[in-house]
Structure formats: structure tokens, C-alpha cells
Image 1 (cartoon, rainbow, N blue to C red):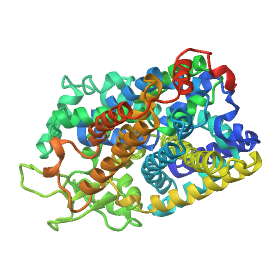
Image 2: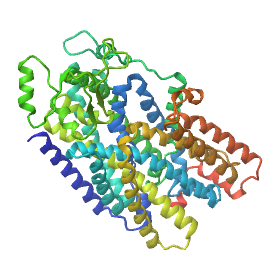
Image 3: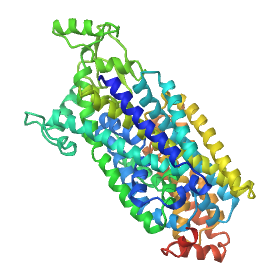
Image 4: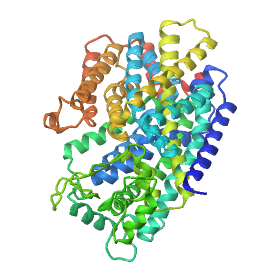
Length: 584
């Protein structure tokens, strides 16, 4: 079978499995729909959490970031990994002990205020829709690769698949689907990495291969890559142009943003107790590490192979006569544009602009010694999917990677849709405006909300091709979560004097300036020269997080203390079993 047939086989089998699981685990109650009945085993929940966490940003975009930013891309590795440790140790067990469905639910009860709950819903929706914009771009990239269709068609096809198993199964269906998706995506990520590591470094362990020597050479992989990229005018691979303050702020924003992400936090409500939540977090960390430790190697191999196959290649405009034209170029001692490039060119995610009219593809950095301009513009999000093709791996490996990319993008998109659905149906309708709504009515509202969210996500995704790479868009969501939700969650757990006035002030003082900063500096009016303290939009959430914490604490101190029952509640949730048993 050729690579397209392998792709159809793997994607068809995995999608059939996902939909079968959604039908088998179809939610029959709001408890099933929101929190999977509180009865998911910690190991399975850890696997589902890992799939939810390792989104298109992790699977598709992170290695592309590392490939093109080199050392500068490590902020995403450090921030996301450290953030999950922070969430697992600092917040997850206590939130599970509280026993509520969602983050706005926690805010509404902890801060005894409908206003605080509504603002928390707005924050959660802002985070989720910003995050889902990145995911839908990943869905578009993956489906356009799989079907060879334009980007926007990929978006709408993927949205339909998400709708089927998210709306039918709710959190129960999504959880078991994500277990299957984790198995698919981890195999899809590591198998080609092992193949390529063997080819490039003769070492089957990618984590060791990329810091070892090239095959048959005494030159290390990273030294060789440094030489190649600097000769073409790019920044040395093992260095970065980012300032130290920006590196620190981006890493911190990703860390603290993780601890405020609604779609990750909600996963810890699907287990029986705070003890199970801790175990679940441990399992998830182990499952996440399997991918995150491989990503730097995948990125380095992708950059090396991309340059080897594309730079100075003769472009062939007519894909139908590709083989004949390529053979003629080879016979003349030239290097034809690789076939994988022609496949990806159809998706509009790779572009060649022949600026000097010589028919040769010059890939150059801003400081190219030969003075030539760059003519090859790759979308960084394609490289995990394209890497097996670039390395000429077997067709079944390429098909497996396509299935894995789709699993990663769809698993997180489904988790985010659940946050959006529960925020509207449970936190706004049931808990705020229509408290007498029946369980059947709430479940219907949840499914309608999920359906509306799928439509909105598809429309957002349709414009996502003009957005930055997936991981950068996702980083904005983390910054918003760090500035708006993290302060009131951590203060709500660890400071019983924190009150509703402080919570409202903290959320608004974090959300509004962070959103304004991102929008302004990513518009045509903003420029890097105007960044405050040299901090980029990806890292500004960390700065405004401290503003929100300070505003919340000061406001709480100058306004009345919360009721004694609320203060006792804060004491109770920090004692295992004290409160959680009431919500089993």
C-alpha cells in the first residue's frame, strides 16, 4: 500500500474506534456529561489528561517551534512541563476536594457571588476560545495533510468529527475516547522519531541521538546543525534572540497559566477523591513525559532534513509530470524539489517565491552570507506530520503520524468544547439564571451549547490560517488564564480572608489588560519596540498575574471578610476527605 492508503486505513480505524467509544459511553445524566460520573480510574484518567493536555500545540507545533527557534523554543517545553507539576501539586487535589464540576462553579461557591461566577465564566470562555483557535488550526493542518484538501475544508471536516463524539458522549465519552487517542498519538510520535534517530545518528533512542554524533562521523548532531543554519544566515540553533526577561516571563506565564486552564482542571473532577486526583496527576506526568522528552529531538531532526532536501533544489511547477521532470534534473546532476514538498504545497502551507527567477529554491536567513533573500516559506506547524515523508520513511509510519496528529488536535478540541458547554449550561443557565431547570433540560442545554461551540470553533478556525503558529496562539490562552483565573483559584484555596470583592477585582484587573496588550501588540499598530519591559504578548500574562494578585489582596483587606461558613469551607478543603466525601 502507498502512504495515502496507509493514512486512510489508520485514520479510518481510529475514527471508527473513537465514535464507537462515544456511542458506548454516551452520557445519560448531567453527572456523566460533566464529570464522567466521578468513577474514572486514576491511571485511565491520567492517560486521558495527557491526551487532553498534549494538544495540537504539543504534538504538531512544539517540535516545529524547537526546529525553527532552536534554544528559544525551549520556553514552551519548560513552561508547559513545569506548569503541569504546579497544577498537580498545588491545586488539583484541593479543587477535587471541593467537589464541584467547573472552575466557575468553584468561584461561585467559594466567593458566594453570582457576579463572580459570571466573570469567571467570561474568563473561562476567553481562555477556551483563544485556545481552541490554535487547536482548530491544528485540525486544519492535520486534515488538509490527510485528505489533500485546502486548509479550511480540513477545519470543517474535523469539526464534524468532534461534534459527533463530544456532543453524544459528554465527558464520559470524551474521557474514554482520549484514552484511545493517547495510545494512538504517543505511538505516532515516538515510532518515526526512533526511525529518524537511527538514520541520522545510528542511535535508536531519540533523546540520546540528538545530543550524540552523526552516523559515521565524529561531529555531534547539534554542532552540525549549528554550522548548517549559521552558514545560511540563521541564528545559531543552540542560542536565542529572546531576552532573558522575555524567556523568564513566557516560561512563567505558561506555568501559571497551566494551573488556571479550565479544560485541564475539570479532568480532576472525574475521579472519586482528592487522593485519586493526586494519583491521576502522577500518571499524567509520566504519560506526558514520554512525548515531551522526544520533542527536542524531533525538532532538530526536522530542521536538518528540511534544509537538506529543500535548499538549492530545482523547483518543478507541474505536479502531474513530477517524476519525469525530477528524473531529468537528476540526470543533469541537479537536485529536484522533493516529492513531499509537492504534496504539502497543495495545502497552501508551503510557499515558494522565486525572487531571483533562477528556478532554484533558496532557503536563507536574514544574515545570509551570499546576500540572497529567502524564497521558501514553510508553516512551522507541518513539520511533525511532514517529518516521516522528508526522511523517506515507510508509508505505514506516515499513515500512523497522520492518525496521531488528528488524535492530538481532536482530543483537546473536545476537552475545550466541554468547558465551553458546561460554562454556558451549568454555570450560566442552571446556576445563575434558571436555577429551577430540570436535569433533562440542563443536559439538553449542554448538548446545544456544545453544538454551538463546535460551529463557533469552526468559524474561528476558518480564519486561523492567518494566525501565528499553533503554539503561539495557545500561549496567549495560557497568559490569559495565568492573569485572570490562577490568582483567584490559588487565593481561594490558601487564603480564607479572600472575599468576593477581591475575586472580582482580581479577575478584571488580570483579564482586561492582558487581552488589551495581546490584541494591541499583535495588531498592525503594535511593534516589538513598544513591549513593556521587553516582555512579549506570550509572556505578559505573568506580569499582569502579579497585578491581579496585588489588586485582589488589597481589595479583600479593605472590604468585609467573607462569612465564617466560607472561611471554614476553605479550611475543610485542605483536609483530605473532610469535604470531598460529601460529593461522591
